[in-house]
Length: 73
Image (tube, rainbow, N blue to C red):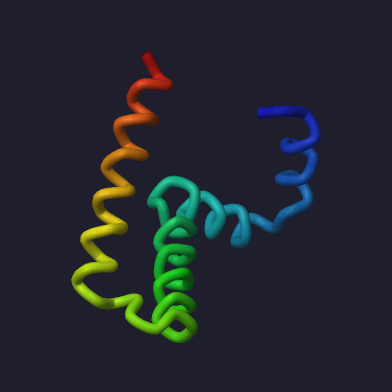
């Protein structure tokens, strides 16, 4: 952890620090962002929840996952 991040965490009350640790370790922030993105997509894009769109997103996600694995090698 950098010195600047340590100084910021020193100013955060212990309750807030505990809440931040829960989100950081459990993926809570990612889950909240995922739900928010799905809700925005459902409310703004017609056909967002169609089976064709879901298949397209899963296919794109699989290619993206393969590319990510390739970047780590």
